[in-house]
Amino acid sequence: MALEVETKDCTALSDAEISEMAELVTGENVHFDVGHLSKQRDAWVLITHVRDGAKLSAYGFCTLERVGGDPTVLMGAGATRRSARRDSALRAMMTDQLRRAVLAFPDEDVLVACQMADPAAFTAFKPLDRVVPRPGYEPNGEDRAWGRRLAKRFDVQGEYKAREFKVYGDGGPSFVLNHTAPRPEKIDPAMTGLFDGFDTANGDALIAFGWASREDLAKLL
Image 1: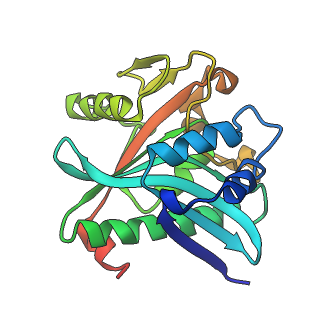
Image 2: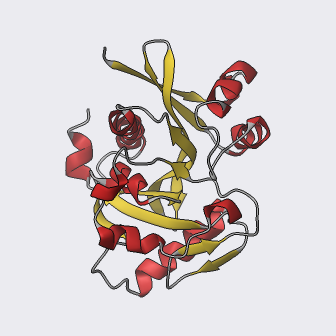
Image 3: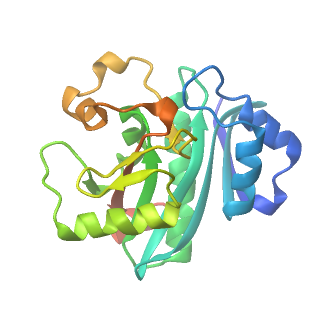
């Protein structure tokens, strides 16, 4: 069965849908309850739902805006169901949000950014170029400036260290893209190393971003 994707205004998000989203992932260090998600509804513009039949497979808040003058897709709290199709659900959600980006920002490269607490979340960035941070790459001053801009825009709680792109939490949740791998042992150890020392229960997170080229975005139309 094909996955169905819908993106709509957060103002159209019902209490029943928020309850369904809160139940998507439970019993983990990173978990957004009804209270957290209700506040996210007020903080973001768009919400994407991915369904496998009647069952919710993924969701993600986002907004399209200019940050530092550049067109940007900002991704807020999001999660995928712990199923065999989780990667497919994440790709479907990303594709829909990128399609909206090319409609909002035609003929421009677009920055895509989110917070992460697990290396598997980099799966969302596979269509992107110039991803920061990444193994084997030494970020430059402009990269770190972007990290600081995004940390401010995400209104991170705790301490943000620009050279590490890491948020050291203050005990509350960081509103990350909550995605895990079916087989985490298959993840490149260098990628896993970006998350060394993380305490996800404390709200630690990695701010990551990459660029979608205008040429690749045009293929989504």
